[in-house]
Amino acid sequence: MSLPFMHRSAAILLLLALAGPLHGEPRPWRNADGSRSVRGEFVKRDDRSVSIVRSDSKEIVIPLDQLHPDDRLWLDAEHPVTPVDTPEVEPTRGVFGILEFGDTREETLRKLRESEIVELNIPEAMLARVGMNGAFRTKAKVGGKNALLFFDWTEDGRLRDIQLRSDPVPAAGFQESLAACWKELADLLTVLHGKPVVSAGKLPAEPPAEGEIKPTHAWKLEDGGTAQLGPAKEDGEVRMVVHFTSETLIRETKKNTAGNR
Image 1: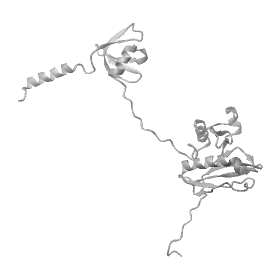
Image 2: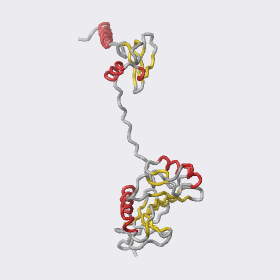
Image 3: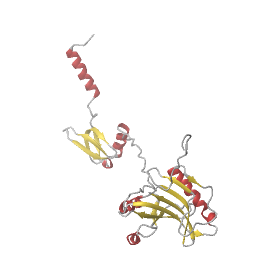
């Protein structure tokens, strides 16, 4: 049986009365040492403050660090802050860290300073005088060796080549001295850039010629360019070198299919 209109209205009013005020019952809110208080209804809160409305309808905001500990406990129990799930943003993957071919010198320097994997190898005051080449190294040693960064630029000042060079070792016995560094770099580049297109099972028996690199591994970079790994010789000593270049040094060969002549 439906209620008459007046009875329905009375029932709604009764329910609203039982539910109480929209924001809750007024309560005292004390300052940090409890010496003063203000009476008001809870409106909203965040992790730093709480908003209340007084009987004169004026809304005030109280910083949590100025609120009495007991009131903060009540607030956390009755109106806890709901954690906001922020989606994880995948970090940008560049050629090396976040460095990208085409970066300007200014962009490259900023990224190097912000990098979590490299650090300055010289005093900051010397950077403007000596430039970036050899000024930054990896924070962690690679196979027990320091690794320094060197750069090459286009005519209009855009990054086109990056070299990661290890500490030098004597040419005699370089295979043994650089074996751990070579393996760690090969493993790291495979994680970052996938399976190499070229991969040698061991270091060359002879050191490279002066000023040259003997690549043992090569990777095609996803956004264009090539990465090579191998020993290089300079001033009679041998280093392990990773060479990132914007050039495509790996050419795919097309296999003949049946019927092709």
